[in-house]
Image (cartoon, rainbow, N blue to C red):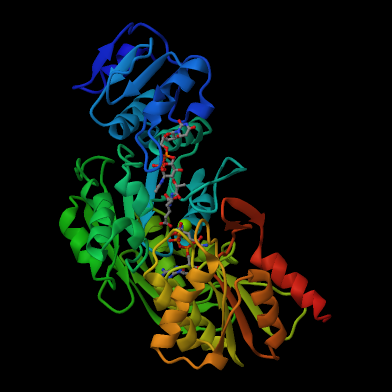
Amino acid sequence: MKINELSSCLAASRLYGEGDIEISDLQADSRKVGPGDLFICLPGHTVDGHDYAAQAAAKGAVALVCERKLEIDLPQIVVDDCRYAMSVLSNAFFGSPSSRMRMIGITGTNGKTTTTYLIERIMQDHGVKTGLIGTIQMRYDGQSYPMSGTTQESLELQRSLNQMALKGVQCCVMEVSSHALQQGRVKGTDYRTAIFTNLTQDHLDYHHTMEEYRAVKGLFFSRLGNVISPWNEERKYAVLNADDEASSYFAAQTAAEVITYGIDHSANVRASQISITAKGTFFHVETFKGESDISLRMVGKFNVYNALAAITAALLEGVPLEEIKTSLESVAGVDGRVESVDAGQDFAVIVDYAHTPDGLENVLRAVCEFAAGKVITVFGCGGDRDTTKRPLMGKIAAKYSGHVMVTSDNPRTEDPLQILSDIEAGLREDGVPQEQYEMIPDRREAITKAIEMASPGDVVLIAGKGHETYQLIGGVVHDFDDRIVAKEVIRGRSY
Ligand SMILES: CC(=O)N[C@H]1[C@@H](OP(=O)(O)OP(=O)(O)OC[C@H]2O[C@@H](n3ccc(=O)[nH]c3=O)[C@H](O)[C@@H]2O)O[C@H](CO)[C@@H](O)[C@@H]1O[C@H](C)C(=O)N[C@@H](C)C(=O)N[C@H](CCC(=O)O)C(=O)O
Ligand SMILES: Nc1ncnc2c1ncn2[C@@H]1O[C@H](COP(=O)(O)OP(=O)(O)OP(=O)(O)O)[C@@H](O)[C@H]1O
Ligand SMILES: N[C@H](CCC[C@H](N)C(=O)O)C(=O)O
Ligand SMILES: [Mg+2]
């Protein structure tokens, strides 16, 4: 594409300099620029991309997109908002890849990764070539790619979707984080189905209040369904959780058809007769396409919600309910989500990714349902993240556990002891006796103590890091995998 073609995608942009130059690629990070690229200057939270334009030019950039004319001898497309421009230009440059496949997006505080995995399995079993983008990885066409976050920036997202489309991917299921919505990372991505899991406290460091957090999630639904016609394939669906009060707010904002799922309230797809054991979860489901009995190999009532969201999305893609049942029943679990660590010990060790008050409460409730003995919980809270969730998570851990090990979970630039003491404030407020908890900043030591104190029938829950294979302390990334550490400790106890 040529510079002037890109410039014409933005009605109010001004092009300075030669427009008849071919662009080989788009970049928003000067460190990745190569000869022939167009560099987009993003004003960030930490630095301003405009300050890296000269570096980009030195690396071979042939044009810039910026919010003010720079003293650099390169053609420049000057716009009011580089972030918005990036989403439009990326769409144009990569040929609107989201319109070349069926897009299913999932937002919500908890359950996004799990639900994407369930949908991916169903669609693949149905013979649809499916791509997945989310916290653990991006994968398609038999290849997996690491992710540095949950939802990519618009430029990387459109690049990925284009690669998927070129490989013949017909359906992409992806997580849409609230940060992504706030920053316009998914603007211009054409979703057919937008799913909402739930809204509970998290990220208040970034969104400030629950109202603001909800409003940002609402953008996903208000942007959906600009074109609706029952006569063509442009129909859009908002799949909402009938048991979450935020759903009525989202329903009011969307022009798409609202389809609900739930357990407690009336819904288009509704589960009943739920029974949970240590091995899995059974439920009966009634849908707009018949009913069925489903035995998940994943535990917890929350996974019934995830399965219901997946069932609804798959039915909307035309997958028969009996096929959906077979696929769901084949899923053994998702990496780092209620994952059992078994090294021959006579008590259970479970690694889980619960890192919010609601997530922790849900997984603890599930664990308590099948624990024959006491529950010992090891957990911490991330640094440079919502501080107000810390005391709440402390209270929840103590409420459901016989013993709690408060430890570190990616302290990042914060003092680990300060994070521990923020958690302890909740324990003190609830009058939790000192002998019921320990403050152990070193996570390996906390896991070791928890495993050493376990007796037959007990459950050791190690929460917060799930699939993560690192511990971020200061600016340093240390290798750390709860599952490996737990196994090493168990083996050290010589079973
Ligand atoms: C708060 C937030 O979302 N920050 C994101 C944001 O960072 P930033 O605004 O500080 O960027 P910056 O470092 O100031 O850089 C500004 C621009 O200068 C460019 N630059 C910078 C340095 C340089 O040498 N050359 C250069 O060109 C950068 O590429 C960027 O375009 O833009 C960066 C580049 O795309 C992201 O990596 C960064 O994510 C940070 C690492 C992050 O931790 N994000 C988390 C909070 C996040 O987004 N999480 C959600 C999941 C949350 C959930 O669980 O629901 C997610 O979707 O991942
Ligand atoms: N539907 C749900 N409701 C509440 N808690 C859930 C639900 N599904 C999963 N959880 C809990 O939250 C944890 C994270 O689940 P998952 O990774 O699927 O969520 P996510 O929304 O992708 O999280 P992230 O925001 O980090 O991407 C799980 O390990 C489990 O403890
Ligand atoms: N997507 C979440 C992950 C949190 C995981 C936890 N291990 C932490 O580092 O806080 C976030 O960025 O808030
Ligand atoms: Mg996720």
